[in-house]
Each structure stands twice: as structure tokens, then as C-alpha cells.
Image 1 (cartoon, rainbow, N blue to C red):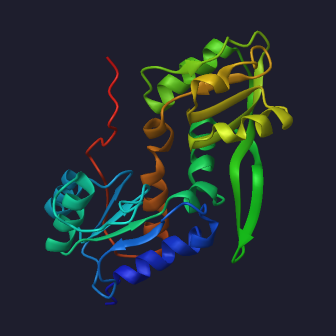
Image 2 (cartoon, helix red, strand yellow; image 1 turned 60 degrees about the horizontal axis):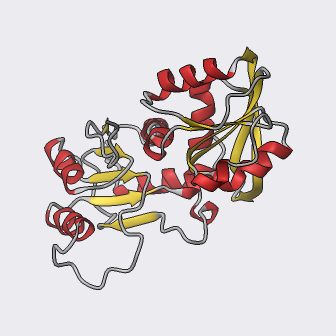
Amino acid sequence: MHRMKIKEVIGALEQFAPLPLQADYDNAGLQIGLTEAEVSGALLCLDVTPKIVDEAVAKDCNLIVSHHPLIFHKLNRIADENEVQVTVRKAIEQHVAIVSMHTNIDSARGGVNFKIAEKLGLRNLRFLGKQTVVDGVEGGEGVVGEFMGELAADDLILLLKKRFDVECVQCNQLLRRPIRRVAVCGGAGSFLLDDAIAAGADAFITGEMHYHEYFGHDQEIQIAVIGHYQSEQFTNEIFKSIIEERCAGVSCYLAELNTNPIIYL
């Protein structure tokens, strides 16, 4: 029986969302580890922390697949001076490889933005913002789609709270017209607000926006900001479906640890 190697799992993930789809500032791809080893199991998560490495070891996983890259900036040394350094050391000591699929899987068809749209029940999906094609895989900065029917603004907020387990949705003035066409961008997506308006969206859903970006759009578009973690929390479901479909026999585990550093009081 063929035992899948770590490099084969990484290959499957990168076939779904090629690395050239990532943003210029990003560091998606292999973070730590030797890829010729056989996969004992894969832990799927949003962020990599020391406790996530502990969870991987406890579940006998020698591969962690994360959304956010562990190594975003240059490491001058590994001396337990911050959480990233501790995580790197623990992963190396425990022989755990780490691969991250970040803005490449945000962008890819079927990726993060499509998952958000799926959770909302949007139809007739199309890309929003800049688009590109890499190795036959389409990518775009966001997604726009439509509800089957119309929703009042307050009902949209209730839907977001329910589907994404959101305690607080940051909004501008509630829209007084019905909402049908919706633009989405996981994470920090405020750069797509003008594109959403140009696409005729009634609402724009993202994970983060700055204070001043809310001004000037009352009754033009409903802004709904649900939190960075909340908007991307289902990315591990995408990883799971890719690996189970393309890497037969590899055991996948959705991380149980909530790594959101923000609490709501």
C-alpha cells in the first residue's frame, strides 16, 4: 500500500491553489520541515501556535496545514524570544512539518471567499476585483453572488451571527432597501469596497475595516464586518476536502483549539 508523503499532500494543496496566486507580501507554502517523510496525519488550522503544535503531536500528526503563515517576517534567530520562535523550535523538535496556504487559497476558485459565499447560501458566484489564472486555476480578490430572495439588513446581520458564530457585527447605518446581491472578502478586505459598489452589491461582508473607511456609504451599501478569524474560520474545511479527495488514506483533523487572539466582553 502506498504511504503518502508530506510533499504529495503539499503538491495537492498547491495544485488547488498555486503559490503564484498569493499576494506579493505573502509567504505561503512550506514553512518548516522535511517533505520526504510519510504523513502520519494532518492537523488543519487557521493559525500556528505552540499549543497547535502540541495538539498535532497529541493527534499523531506530523503535518500542520495552516491558513496564516507562521513565518511572515525574517527570523534572525530562534531563541524563544517570541511566540513564533517558540513555535518554530517546538515544531522542529517534534519533527512536525508546517505548510501554509494563505492569499493563494483566498484567491483560488473554491477557496476562502467561495466558502464564505457557500455558508451564506449565495448563488451565481463570480469573481470581484483583480483576476488571474495560474496553471489553469482561476483566482480573484473577492466574490460577489446573490441570495435566492431578498433580505432586510437586520436579517442579514442575524444570518451572519448565526452562520459564523459572531458575537458582534460592525456595520454602517442599516440599509433601508432589500439586500440581494452581496460581495464578500475574507480577512482584511476593505480594499474591495469600491469594487463591491461598482458591481452593484447591496452589501459588503469582510473580516476587517478601518474606522474612516465606513464614512460616506450610508444607504449606498450595507457594510458588515464580522471579524478576521470569523471570516476565515472554515478554511480548514477546504483543506480537509482537498486532502481527502486527492490524498487517499491521509488522516485529517480539524484543530479543536480556537486561536482567535481577540475576545468580546
